[in-house]
Image (tube, rainbow, N blue to C red):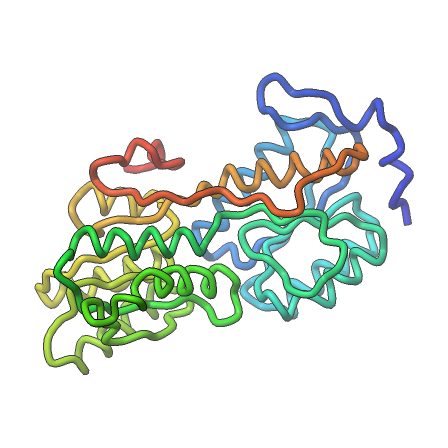
Length: 313
């Protein structure tokens, strides 16, 4: 393994980059792994990481797709260990299932930075860089209160079970609204696995089982929110719908009066920061073990604050 050969080349590994704010590197091989590149959110994260690596220079980036399978992502991490990469930047599919593979990487002397999704129970992870998903869920709940000060009936579309963003965003929503359950009632809560088609099918089934439509549907990502929007529009209903991720399509929908709001968590900023942290560690600098960006709610009134507003058609 080549774990420490390049990392001792202090003068060659890092220098300030005036253009990107990301450290310079020379002759480093870094493996990246996203949970599933079928989701536009992770495609954007991967592209942002690749752009940051290219702008930094001297980095060979091995890009892998977990294909929404912990088995596949585990295999990709194991392959990276065998290759003796200089570092791993990963968004783990499952906070628990990916722990053994990442523990192996740490034990092999390969620094690991997690982004967006954390992993549980692994000693030696260099840093986690992500959005504060609990605060993001709280922001969704606070917007519900602002929109419906007299109370609301709420449908909660939850994300993939076991995924840390799903857990945290759901926690955030409940942190705010559970203490006001006399006014804010969850009439249905169900996972739609972060998937648009499931967002539509779950919403359709929930609406069919309710005596009257809810006031708001809060979703743990934009894909589920857009799936719910399709059903709501087909049925001619007036229901506020809140997403999470600020995808360009969701931003366009907010602009055009479809979705009510979405939550911006700055995914490009997360990946750029993760690379910066990894390179700083390779230089021998101390880094923060936890770096969280604060999400904000995006409505039609502040679309210009979104990271990807320039991509909206």
